[in-house]
Structure formats: structure tokens, C-alpha cells
Length: 235
Image 1 (cartoon, rainbow, N blue to C red):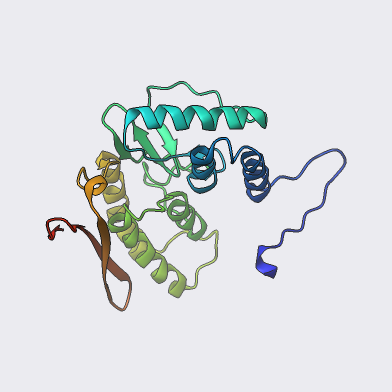
Image 2: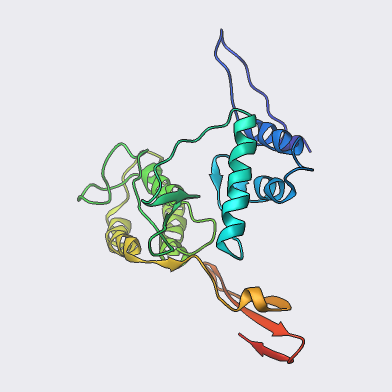
């Protein structure tokens, strides 16, 4: 597909890099050791995003064995990521706290030139969008917080203001209300391990319920497990 093609221009001795190249080299390196380390190959190709690696195992011995193989495969390709373990680990926009085995969120908004969250500065249309796009939430755990800004940006667009024009008074008032709610999200914790019942289930179903309004679409998900031997199920 044309949308998957990349075009770049090298200037002098500078090298252009894109994540897809890193993915290709990483997977190609793992492919060469697929026969010797099939489980590690699966983890690298299915549980890796650039240098973020997160996978789950049924017991400690499997986790240690596969992780060691993943590290050795990366070493063969001269991929080294020194890391001090024990503290929070960043994983796809979230932070994993190993001591409590929970996911948490920390908002830094490094790309913002002005602090429009902690002060009384009126954000521009560009800054409001930067705040939303900097809240990386691939699992949708913060949807109940980010939906407010998404709905407000709809109003910003209808207001017809320029990218670097400050929000009008009416929208600034709702912005102030929303940003206090967002800061509460830093107090949220989400358990990484979904349920102790999943490993013993013969069949797992994920049920999604969806509804929509004029401004947004919402969904609710629940899982159920079944054990064929007893015929029991639980949601």
C-alpha cells in the first residue's frame, strides 16, 4: 500500500531512521535464531514495540528463561538497553511499578513551550491539541479523562480560531475545569495482571458493548471464562 511507503533524503553523513527500520532489523535478527529459541522469537516479534518489551508468563521460571533468551538474541544483533531495575518502567505511555505490579500515568508534556496546565495561562488551539496528543493511552484506560478534552476540541474547531490564537473566555473556563480532572488521573492505578482465573480457563471470551451520542462513542468490555470439564462460567 502507498500509505505504508516512506520517502526520506539523507543530508551529508546524517542517517535518517524510522521505527519500521528498527522493527525490521530486530525481527530479522530474531528470525536467525528462531529454531533455537522459538518462544523468545515469538516474544520479540509479537510483544515488542521499538525498545519497549512487555510479555506475560505462567510462572517465574518461564519468565526468566524467555527473558534471558530475548536478551541474548538482542546481544547477537548488538542491541543493548542498559536499565536499572526496581523502579518504575515506562511502557507505551504508561509506567509499570514492579513492586505493586500496577500501571500508572505520569504526565510530562515536554513538547509544550508554556506551562498551560499548572498556571493560569490561556492555551492556544495548538497547545490544547498538544496536551491531548501527548496523553498516549493505547489501552484506553484514561478515556474517561481524555474524552472531555476531545469534546472541547470539537468546540474549538467550530470557533474557527487560528492555531496560535488563545481560547476564547467561554472555552477557557471549561479548559480550567477539565485540567483539574486530568491531574487526578495521576493518582489512578491499574493492576497489570487481569485475573488469576485466565490461565486455568479452557475458553476466554471478550464481550464489548458500544453506544454513541452526538459527541462521542463509548464502550464497555467484560470477559468471561469457561471450563469445559465443569461447564461453569464467570464474568
